Image (tube, rainbow, N blue to C red; front, top):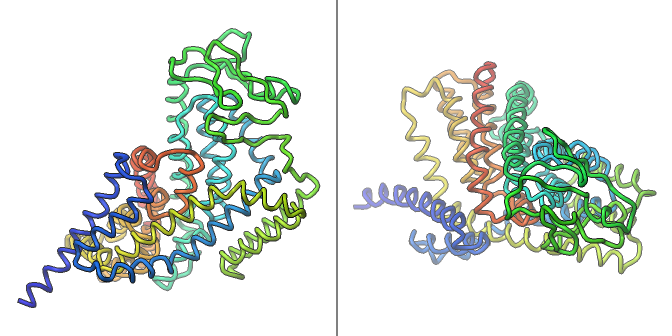
Amino acid sequence: MAQGGGTYLPHMLTFLGFAMIATFLVLIMMKKMSPIAALVLIPALFCVFAGKGAHLGDYVIEGVGKLAPTAAMLMFAIVYFGVMIDVGLFDPIVRGILRFCKADPMRVVVGTAVLAAIVSLDGDGSTTFMITVSAMYPLYKRLGLSLVVMTGVAATANGVMNTLPWGGPTARAATALKLDAADIFVPMIPALAVGLLFVFVLAYVLGVKERRRVGTLVLPGQAAPEDAEAELVPAAPGTAAAAAPAVAVTSVPASVSVEGSAGSSASAAGPAAAPHGNGSAPASEDGFQGLDPDRPTLRPRLYWFNAGLTVVLLTAMIMELLPIPVLFLLGAALALTVNFPHMPDQKARIAAHADNVLNVAGMVFAAAVFTGVLTGTGMVKHMADWLVGAIPEGMGPHMALVTGLLSLPLTYFMSNDGFYFGVLPVLAEAGAAHGVSPLEIARASLVGQALHMSSPLVPAVYVLVGMAKVEFGDHTRFTVKWAALTSLVVLAAGMLFGII
């Protein structure tokens, strides 16, 4: 009897684990629950179903304890990079991207992918999403482009770049299998480059679709020749043209409008924007303020100080001189003190970013309930064991391929820590029994990162959807298929080049 119960319990926990994840995804994609409510209530319910409701408090506290450093890091990273955006550190990059984009939807989407990839070099997804959304959101709103295209492209580009040695997954794989991170990452560069190229091609295709949906963009007063391009030209401060780029839209569906200032919108036939006294970028209908070239928070005289501080901060983060939350805490305090020495100004900057801080921190702690129950009840372990056990014996010599394929669902449904420290050693051991090198297994484990960055267990994705004002379910429904395809492209390239 005891033996039967012993075999029944793992199967039950495996089933409940998959059922919990499926229930969560279905409810948020159907918009029946908000992500924060679903992250808390669904695991609590399934914990009771598993007969471990009495331990729910322990699981949650353990989960919160593990994610508290992440929440602290995100809170102070949002403040730090929010201040850097306020003072104009990233304006030159943004201006370059926007000059490339002009008013062409295709260029805007490709520019989003390029900007996200460049900023991803710092290894922090939250930073990437804050800068990318701050730069591109007003343009998407003004041109009537789909915001889920922006979030999908940004998340997928960042996912490919997340494999950098200082991004996390590579270091985890190296630690788990006792390998050198450089031996894992450097040979993977060609395959990852193919993956990034695929993201740019995907952005081009999605951009062309947006161009067809929105219509042809031309300057007012001009004809609409084929392949016309409209450049976003700033006018003198205080004029209507300075409030929003003068863009006329032809062949536009009636539902598409060009965003004006103060929440108004101009139709295709109407004026581009209403006056906006200080010459700033217009606020969209939900009050989002773009990167205003004349905003009072700019600190041009402190540009090189801020650039140097950011380089020092990122270098210290890569070299692991101090824990990342501590680095961002110190960096945020120093950035506020130097750029805004007066207390009212400091309070104003903190208040300006309080919404993002609260939303993201709340989401992280809600996710702690989900991960705490998954881990504490043993669901995630039994799910991983079941998947590994389901691998046919004949696939042993192809364990690198199997690892690459498993990395897609496992890194989506699990934290990177759970996958790399819990599952990867088992896969590597199975591969070693068939003569497959641990290095190949480690490299294959990285291919799922493009999909991982849209996982509900990744705190940075809530920064992305929160700042972009996109429902998490909409982002998931749109992004998962493209991110999974990108991961498969990386895997195929790795096998083609003999890396995996």
